Each structure stands twice: as structure tokens, then as C-alpha cells.
Image 1 (cartoon, one colour):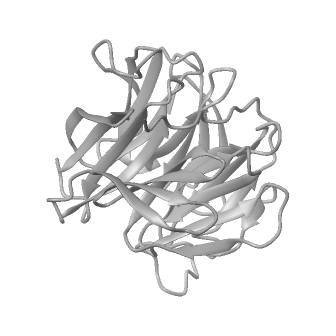
Image 2 (image 1 turned 120 degrees about the horizontal axis):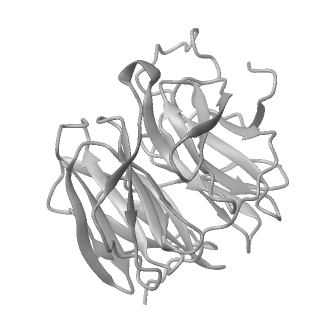
Length: 291
């Protein structure tokens, strides 16, 4: 294992994804998409609690201290924190059993961007949707593996990627609604030999932290797209970072075992969730606005 890395959770996920902090509850939530589990653990440590899910879900956001929103293969669900009861809020690609949800983040306005993709990563089946106060719109289509959805602190810009294309784009957004206001432009392109861009977050200083799938790395990019730091990770298939802690100053990163040898002899820390011992000026995502 890399000398610097800490283990936040030692349960190996098939496809760990979508970590999101809930500052009101002092907990991190994340998903094992293929395992159909919602995972939760206090910032301060302790046991990880696994919640069985009836569907494949890929991202989680807070609505308030008693309700979560989950992006899943057939729509958006509200989940009661106390009881675990889930209620379908709105269908999304429910008539397309060949697709599922993937990466998603909440814009400072409270709008949600959520990506979908083919369950077999079929080319061109992916899209990114906007959800705000009960309304859904399609933003981008023709993607394969939408990822790296992240927003600037002032809400004037967004990032998103297609992992298959190895490209992260940036686009201007309306700070009041989270809707795009211009054309997308290339932010970063990663050569296939170096891996692929997966999940991302933007800290309070404007640095973009991106998990590089297949590259065993967490990369930091300046606002102009210059890579300013790469932190070696102890698992090749890292998937998504998030900020945790009372001050959002600690990074955690999820990872996956999907596609690896069953004994993981060549990647024995695959699927775990890690802490990164670099202090950051992080920030918590806002609550998603459902009504």
C-alpha cells in the first residue's frame, strides 16, 4: 500500500462510487453500484453500515437531515434516513432497461446534474440530465461514460467528462439555475495509456480533484486545466473523491474491484475507500432542491 494512504472503509466494493458528505449528520454516504448497497460511516470513524437497495444506485445527495436523494437505474428516489423507506420521486430512463445512472453532483443553486450510461458501457448511450424543483431536462447526449460532474463554488461553471473519450469539458452555467449558458470547451484530455477521468470535485480554491480510473492516481488541476499535483493511490481503479470532516478539509476516494481477478492479488486494496492526508480547503455540496 502507498505509504501515505489511509483506509476510511475496508469493505471492498464491486463499484464504489458517488461519495457525498452529509455535514448535518456528520456522515459520508457512498454507493456500491453493482452490489446494490448504500454505505454510510461517520466522519469520525466507527463501523460502516450497509443498506441493501432494491435497484442499482450510483449517487446520493442530501435533501435535509431526514431525507436523502438517490440517483438510480430507473429514476430519482427519496430515502428516509431513519427508516430506509424509499419512494420514487421521478422516473428517469425507466423505459430503457439497458441503461443505469452514473456520476452526479449538486450545483450551488440546488440543481442536480446526473449522468446515465449503458450497463455494458455501450458507445453513445450516455446522457446528462438536469433536475431542479421537480423539473428534468436533457443537457448532453451521445456520451458513453459520463463522469467528473463538478461545479465552481460561485455556480458560474461546470465540468463533466466522458471517461471513454478521456476528456473533461467545462461549460459556463447560470448560478441561479445550474443550466448551461454556453458551449462546452475542452478542459483536460487524458491519454488512454494514463487511464481515464472518473469522478471529480472542486475545492474552495478552485482546484479540480479528479480520480483517474486505471491510473491509480488522484490528480489536481488548476482552473486553466494545468495538472499541478498527482497523488499515487493504492488501487488502480479509483472512482470518485469527496470532502469530509467538520471543516470539509479531508479528501476521501472510492474505488472498485469490477473487472479484476477474483483474488485481487495484483491490486489487493481495490474496492476500498481511502483517506488522503493532504489538508484541503474543501466545501460541502448544497442540499438538492426537490420542490
